[in-house]
Image (cartoon, rainbow, N blue to C red; front, side, top):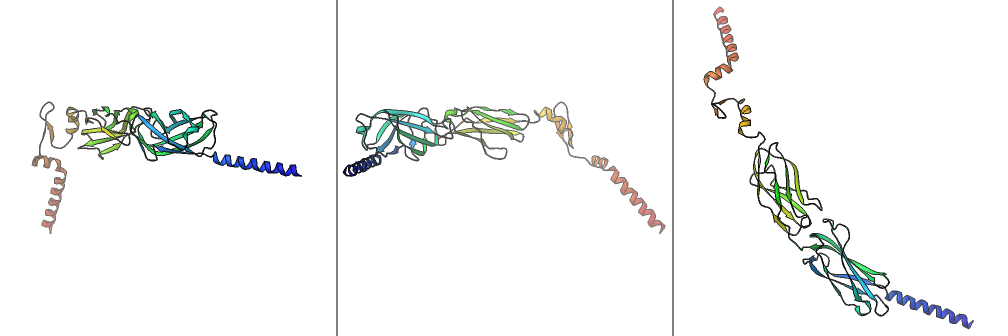
Length: 294
């Protein structure tokens, strides 16, 4: 009976110890920088995070601290590895922040990054915990000015605009008109992730000369292109318009491609209304005869 009592006490003691160990082994990982809404504005950035409450570990155990990033606006739309620090000694870390300097050159600029840090026991590969920061801005570059703007002319009134951009520096583009415009002064262009073009297709435009430019944006900075001139000439020049113009009243050719516009003379008006005049004369004649008979 005594032995059973001792055994029960030993079991309870062991369970209590295990319970204490498991509680103390619970870890909390916290990203210090970049914090939510923070900015990474350097190609070499110091990432900062902490680990607390990790409990007892063997002497000399190392940590594997890995940082990842993703942004739905960029080619980094799924988790991309930024880098790893696997030289931190867990037994000497305590509650101190761990600074890990890594290159962010591989990240395209955007304003909605999610940054993740994962802590592992480098010896056994066990995940100790992780944390994330959201709405992080990566602002390492400024967009290069859009170039190769087309078209310079159009002959059907339906214009396809295009410009070349540096894709990894560009999130969006806007087409702006200065002076005359086809209805609006600006239009949002299409920039497909991973491509080096911004386009706006099938814009209906009246015949006229237009001045326009393109603005490239990384959602933090913008850069304008040079101004381009596009001449929309549906009829293909004045010579091609002559046959249509000659159909208009008062327009006549005075030789070659020279036209003159004249007013309508009294004789021209009589000729064009001869039928109406004849009817009026007949009516007057009938009225006169009827009055004389009375």
